[in-house]
Image (cartoon, rainbow, N blue to C red):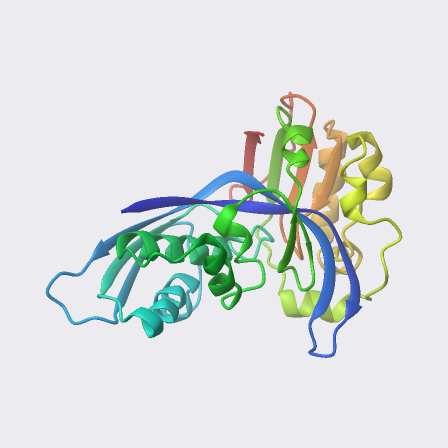
Length: 277
């Protein structure tokens, strides 16, 4: 059984307050984009249950494979349903530590695959609750539709009009060979109530976004990684209508009204992806 699972961008991101539990309250818009990882699941017949063997291809990601969110998603459901052992192959096309939600998307896809493969009859609503235990933005990828997200990024209000707003436009995503630690990004940001709520701004014409729509992480992250600021400036110079860093980085995305005639040139180790929305 195989399932492809998308990336997302944050359109606007306000860090509005620090919570008593140490997390931060956010305001942001999650928008699904057609860049996909693919998971392929095989049941290990004749083997004792409770094991998940993961292999990967595509973009290389670091870290202990046992900590991969795909493996964690399997063990999370196995504790509840005593699942058979499985082999999973993950083809990575979404770069990691990029603000695109690739790991969370993979985890949500794994929950959906296991639910279907083993006929667990877990409702979509319950899958969202389970996904929340794996990461704040994981529930978004159960449905993968545009939402306004609040709380720690885990409380969603559907924004179906966003699809119409961006339909036919072109999205360019650029990730230089640098990474941003989420913890470090939060440690440098100064929470403050938003002047303009991104939920309201995205309902304005896109010409207004440049003036009003901000990502609160940009100031501190750009000071540490000026290459990201350079990417943003270059994309505007090539005719983008709106450019912003996604999440806490390190991908910068640009929205063009039509197919860009030219784009900045980067070294081979820079990730660049162009698609029509």
